[in-house]
Image 1 (tube, rainbow, N blue to C red):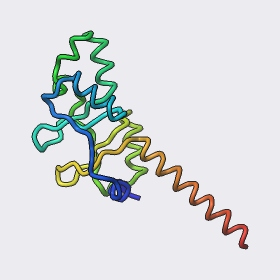
Image 2 (spheres, rainbow, N blue to C red; image 1 turned 90 degrees about the vertical axis):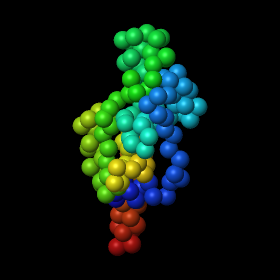
Image 3 (tube, helix red, strand yellow; image 1 turned 90 degrees about the horizontal axis):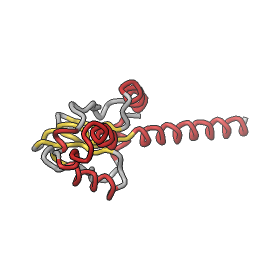
Length: 142
């Protein structure tokens, strides 16, 4: 299964912000949508990722003044990305190696989706459960 197939049935809404969004406003977006990270754009281009980790690390370094900075000053950049034809297992491996939890999906430099490690793990568990059920059914019918 590829990431492209996984995101195929989803709606097109991906919460994003721009590089000039204030950190305090970006935090509100994360909280309002109950998400841990979001892609950051600069015009039509993916500029980076803004995550809870970015906030925590900068708060430790700078204190509350970080809230008045722009997302472009604190985001993680460049973003690690995947193509739609990336397999779910390859994406999981990449995310584990790079110690990241969110992955923008790009096609021809255009973001077409955003997946979390939770999305990929859920898909993998569903797949394993379906395989186990098929095996049980096969054994019972033999």
